[in-house]
Amino acid sequence: MSGTTAMALPAMGLDDLLHGDVVRPGDAEYETARRVWNGSIDRRPGAVARCADEHDVVACVDAAAREGLHPAVRGGGHSFPGASTCDDDLVIDLRRMRRIEVDPDRRVARVGAGALLGELDAATLAHGLSVPAGIVSHTGVAGLALGGGLGWQQRRHGLTIDHLRAATLVTADGHLVHASEDSEPELLWGLRGGGGNFGVVTEFEFDLHPMRPAVTAGAVFWPLDAAPEVIERYREWAAGATDEVTSILVLRRMPPLEGVPAEFVGTLVIAVVACHSGPPEVAEVDLAALRSCANPMIDLIGPTSFLQHQTFFDASYPHGWHYSVKACDIGALDDDVIGLLLAAAEGIRSPRSSIVVWQMGGAVARLGSGSAFRGRDAAFTLNINGNTETASGFADERAWARRLWEDLRPHHAGVYVNFLMDEGADRVRDAYGPDVYERLLALKRRVDPENRFRRNQNIDPDGSASA
Image (spheres, rainbow, N blue to C red):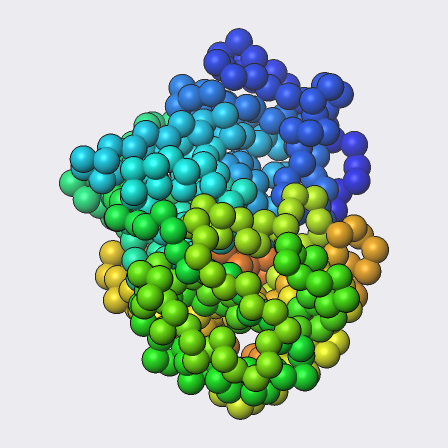
């Protein structure tokens, strides 16, 4: 956290060049413009350039090169470590660039880099089409897509990057480049998982697939003392689950959801949140073994719109709370892992902290050849959230998350790059593995040899990595 007074950047000519505008320390809108989703990140940029179009982004990148700056790039501003802001430097803010165009005949969507997942879903589902993308509707499309893009459709249709057919970006030399399989295919490969290392993406082009507007989805909650039986059943059920269902196992304190009795709120629980995109009658059969386990406190699974289900976790991750996450992929929910998770769950104090276990497999494992995403073979990916509403108690929750992550170290099998905090060179390499990292490094040296874009999970052209 900064908490210091920001040093305003010089004009750099941007005020007269941009179709958007520039906000600096002392301006009336500065406090709002500098804020990001994670309230524990308190940085004060020297200027926030609120870009209206690609012309503005080119002007910002050119100005950064002239002034020797290393700009942060903000789409939705949803990164855990606060990669979309900085102290004293330039923020290239893309939030005004959120136009979405859907071509239902070609099943293609063109998406501005400032768009949010909920906006993308609404635009595509209006045509009975979709692109797999996330679980929190106010997440930015750009950051999610550039890192991989886990989501409720992943086991049936893969990750967001598996549907990225092209992208337009401004590279470090100020050139506007279109990356596709026909033009700059290696750059397109790097954008499919390599994060913001290669320039400022201004527009994405996604392939769409048919999607039912209604799904069978929701959560089943059990008291924590039923967790051993629930996890055993879940482990068996997940191993045979069809690709039409994606699920998340959660250990936390019961949130105040609609339909949850007040006396349950705040108690330690284990839950399975699931989304089944097949016909309702098939979903009933596929989910029956899970829902009949033990004696649930409450079962909220039922028919719902996919748009509504995409907001299920919104209230658990609102703007402004303090977030810290530790993450790892694992090969199996074996007895040792289960024991560690259950022991740690007993120590959850904050009503905002949680242990989240994503079910992988299905299409995620099948669609791996054209991207830089490492975790195709993971059975599950974990994120351990040490979260609080304010700074009060945050250090304790963050320490709790780190302890569990350390205890799980013998079971680590990689990490999803979008779940990394500011964790240094080895963890960035771990997110990609040696072969993919070396290929990304070669691409970085070609398109950004001076490491202009380094405020990310960085592929350093000197050969090291730092967040």
